[in-house]
Image (cartoon, rainbow, N blue to C red; front, side, top):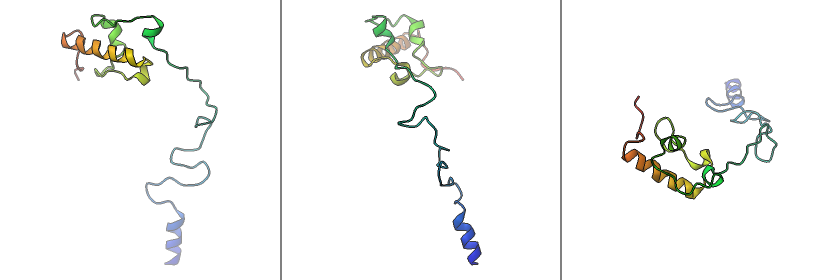
Length: 110
């Protein structure tokens, strides 16, 4: 009976990752963590509209607006596109206007 309790306590419980050096829930720690040097250098995203000095975003320019709409019809967030805050607001307004006059779909068919 005592042997069974020792065997149970030494093994990790079901659904838990083994503890120890490098055996955390996300796997062994690599160089990509905070403070470490990662393999890839992520370039800072720059606003496309600021670099091309586009002030007004036309709602009729469907090709431009489709770059900022995902396949499912959702507006892609700033952190993924790299657009600045003011242009993201204008872009959102232009996408919504284009949807209302049926230039862009609200959602895709599945």
